[in-house]
Length: 207
Image 1 (cartoon, one colour):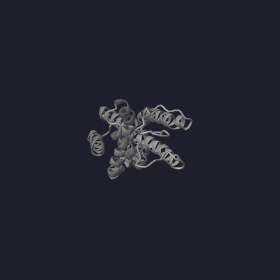
Image 2: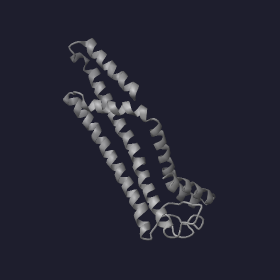
Image 3: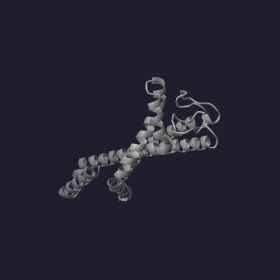
Image 4: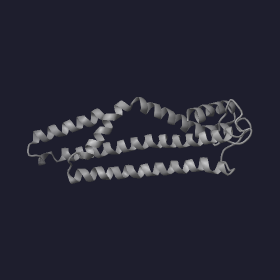
């Protein structure tokens, strides 16, 4: 993705610098690609910090819960699932629009002689050698299509993971609130308070 789309996209941006329409056409794809690379790098270097968070989510679902606590977690998980499905649907449509029409000669891009002197690419890019001849053109088109799919999966995957994380935290905080409100129902008030404080500290420490 970096070699097939991001770097050539930056080179293309430099070539069309000053042409606002061409720059906008470049950045509407170039910015998401660049953000995807940054997201991937950040998540990769923080994977050790994310591991205990993921383990805690698994433990929260596996531990013994009351019916009310389970219903709270399921309610928040359903909201997160709807948002995940919406995000995946939008990215799928974006991939179809970017990849399929150009295969049949249609494109929504703003074409210029600076970046598309011959056969147009899927995204605005500039390569240091002529890639309009067969089979280089087909190889580059395939690489760009794969890059688009990888970017869509990475971009959506990271965002949906954070979405799931936020809604899981919401569920745990709502459960904690109900426990604090129901402290009088504990047989031993001190034990109940201690348990809730430990759970609160656990959420603060990991999130």
